Image (cartoon, rainbow, N blue to C red):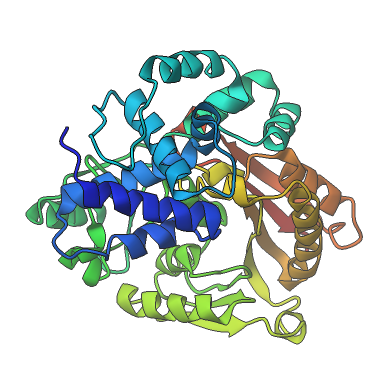
Length: 404
């Protein structure tokens, strides 16, 4: 493999922004890929994949390179050299690359690979938390899977097309995608590609959405013509799916505390041809209190630690602090009690997270059912999705029904 100096330097620039400036990896990669318009898809692939892999295994590489935060540029080059040696790439003769003891690197790697927190590169507190919550075997399997790069999964927008027509449209643009058994609207790319530049995307035929995430809206048992409220809509991945399941009939109210995310949702809804979505920014408690007792279906896609989606956001394990779990559990506790009141008698609600921790999932639901706000609800069914079992993101979803 021939190494190009400007590509390696781009990786170092990206790592500096992620590790030292605390910027988000996905935003940094987008920014860095714009540095040089002459880079082709292979160049861009090298930058993105190398950056993500080094973020994923940051703890392992820093340990082997014997460097500590904040990282100087020579430190980042030392980490990169470790990555290259472990990949079997011949190191270039550049002044930035110090003499590198290759045998010692491989020996250190073999030694650290015996210890899970180094092998899978997680902070001590996350490793302890996961083992305690899931047990040694499941946590070990889950961590290994969550370190694998996520595949690109598309959700067919059934307001505009069907899965087979979409598959053929992508094939016309040299993108091979195949259906996934058990996921009615999903297509999986055989090879990574920038799907956002396709005509099919511009025509609103699909959204990029993980297979596990696609199960959440289905879980809500939607019927066209209902009044549905998505309480933590964000940029609207699940709202757009709900609109499709509703066949554009009825009313879908998408709420969030961040107005900027709702703006993005409106833009996406136009492209998707989703006409029954009404966005409402939660700038006071009045916004949701007005809706109490009025909705047939309510989705609470609650904020969470995101431990189920580390494949997509590997930098989040370095950004998260030990006290964050307690804080987020408290927020979830309040959200489910406040937003459950929107469900009308006989209506249904889904509580979902992209976490694999019971504290955020089944424990929250059990605690809610024992509370004053939850006394009229019953748990119809719940689903725990582990990346190591499904091959897709870790998720939890619970369907609750309110008695008449």
